Length: 162
Image (cartoon, rainbow, N blue to C red):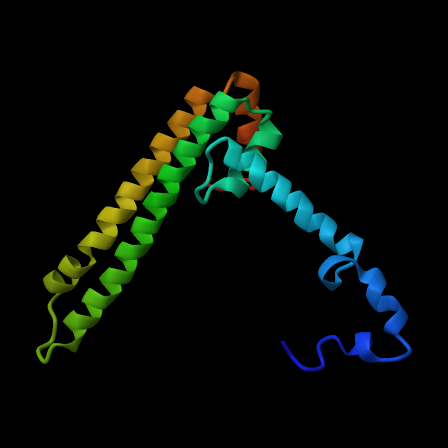
């Protein structure tokens, strides 16, 4: 902590305000958002949703009025998408390293060696496209017609992105 971080608490003019700032020096207004987020986290963890898809899942749950079974199924779908995206990103980074290794060679690289170095990146992109397609099919299977219309609206107006 910086030495002058709470300078106003020690200053005689502002000393009267220090005790009124609530717990940890925050006002009641500043702690409301923290408490609301904590309630949302505990509600989501009660469903067993402790992985990294809380925010889009919470958005879909609120906008589409999902029940608990639909929420669980969409959580698994979003988790699979998250893993596929991470894998595609990792393959893209590895591919850049392989292309750099090919370009570092003393001889001029031919087109076949560059294409061979780029092959994992293309395969992972195709796998990601297949996963997105499977996710959309699973979304359509899980949602009822009204929810599908609302989901299509969210996709069309870019409020939700796959």
